[in-house]
Image (cartoon, rainbow, N blue to C red; front, side):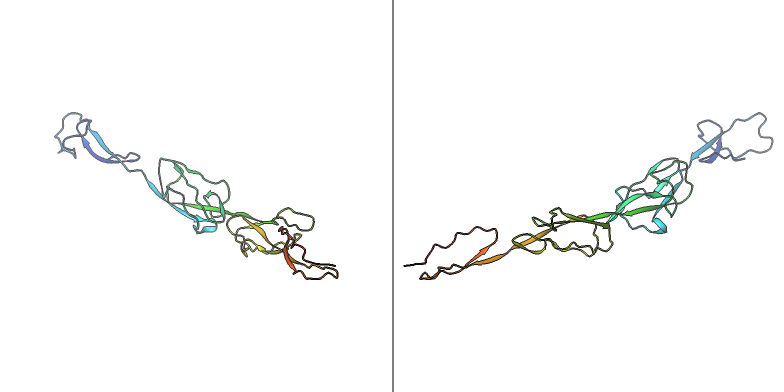
Length: 232
């Protein structure tokens, strides 16, 4: 009668402990008149290996990018360390055993905890993105501090601050295009200013000759034209 042994496959019976030579399958009736000692030959089975299936919370298809060397199978009797994935605009909040991503996150598959295909669910949290508006020398009323607006990645962005003001300048634009949604990274928008120009007129007050007007730019030094008026 063949025996069983956990994790092994029975081979044959042998007359020696090394299980060499011809295997014993039996003998004719009356062929043995004394006790016979036989040795069983065992072959260790390959350990069970279970496939790991990755999904998103709610049983949706996995939408992230796996990290280098992420495990695709789990071998019985050994621990398997899981690898964190990445996803644009999101932070990874762990692998879970249920589609609802409740309870505690799983970092390692235990050696003896699984006996079938394993499905793991990724929990993602949308990143909070901040847009900063730098007045660059201007102000909003009495405040010269930058304004910040925050929101979740991918959500609409509509709270663009009013244009700041600056003495001697007109607001031209922000230095980059403002997206209609919160993108995957923080952004800073800096005010671009255009200095105002003005005209200087010279009045000789009844003097002869004339002097041409001068165009001046705010905050840009410029030497005035030398006096050309003549008065007798």
